[in-house]
Figure 1: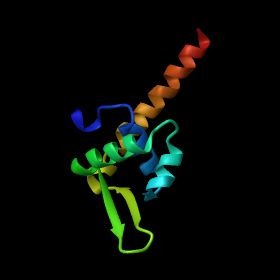
Figure 2: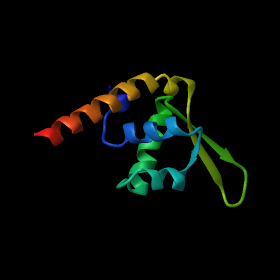
Figure 3: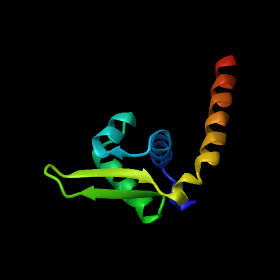
Figure 4: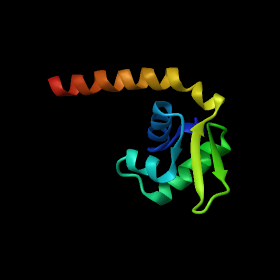
Length: 96
């Protein structure tokens, strides 16, 4: 579970499930409230766990893209269930 613990990892994976790959700034803009430092930390941890891949292009300025690995893509069913549960939970809270 250490692989997915923390506030931001699910948000990062969720965004990467929506699109094939993201550049750093693009991903940072999609995740409200995350700092650049925290995004770097979480991306490194997810890369180390083989959840995401990092591809660096030899260009100026440097271009880096992040994408889910095949292993990371296996999280999609789990993310879908958690998303559905979250919606139900919010609906339930609104009714109280």
